[in-house]
Image (cartoon, rainbow, N blue to C red; front, top):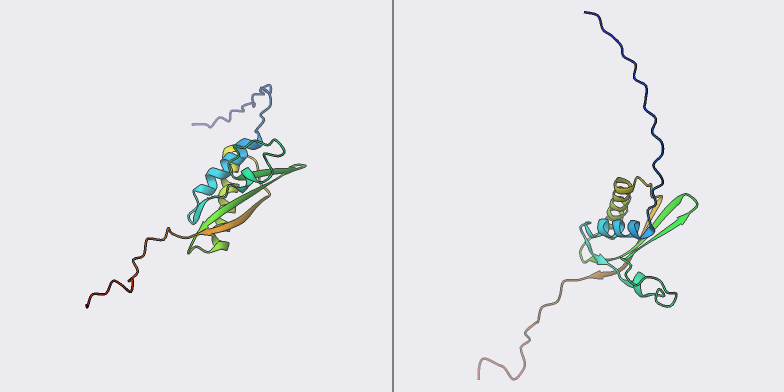
Amino acid sequence: MTQENSHFEPQTVAPLGEINITTGVLEAIAAKAVSEVEGVYQLHKSFQTEVGGFFGMNPDRVGARVRRDDSEIAIDVKIDLKYGYSVPEVAMKVQQKVKEQIFFMTDLVVQEVNVHVASIQTEASQAVDYLHLDETDGE
């Protein structure tokens, strides 16, 4: 048996058009990625309320901001952290998760993800029953 080598010419396809991804889509992907990281209580809502209303910005923002300088993309997320988790560890996980998800979904490379920890949320304190001085067992 002899082996035959077949040469295949790549087919050229005419471009179909352009693909535009809005910053709102990138913000939504970033917000979803942040919410999946263990230790994050929630996205902090201050990006929605700071000065957005004054300048006519969309009040339905999702808690992440995308900045684009030339060809670089930077994302700022502001989070509320759960009590008991390491701030640097959670911040690094958030950075990694946001970069991964945006790359997997859009094929865009994010140069930096800035994580701002706005607060640390503790568990809701339960009602504590205190012994009042007028409530004594031995009368």
